[in-house]
Length: 180
Image (cartoon, one colour):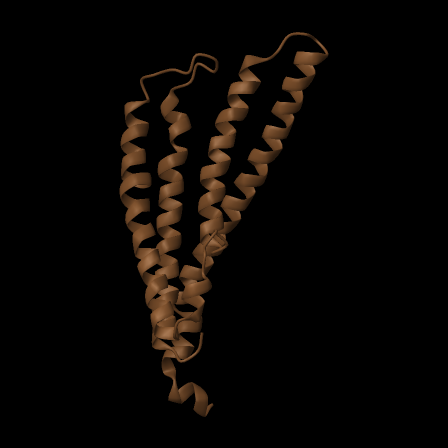
């Protein structure tokens, strides 16, 4: 009981804002992973149909080829944001890991801030502008607005932005605590 009284912020952080944000992150993780799995499944079916129609029926399906290509773009963007949220993205950390704790955390914060700016300006805002501009143009094979395909860019930007803010919050919590 004395440990809780000596550190009241620990009790609040476990049941307060941090736990709420963590639950939201877990929900976003679940949606991103489920969407990625669904896209991979759809791509598998489409590519299998493409191969079968080309070689068995001698009549390739243009729709399945184009749709598989667009789904691959969605997979890369959504999957990339998801992997970033898991902090499993590719990084060369040899030098950073050799630094003292405060410097290492400062470098991580700097990296998260740079990614936050990119996710906000390029992916989210720029992606939304690009998506809006392409809504009038139709894809020749699918006859849907190209902007629908471009929705993946601001969506992945918003997800990456959320993950950046979550990661920054965790890093600032590490700054204030004595443990890693």
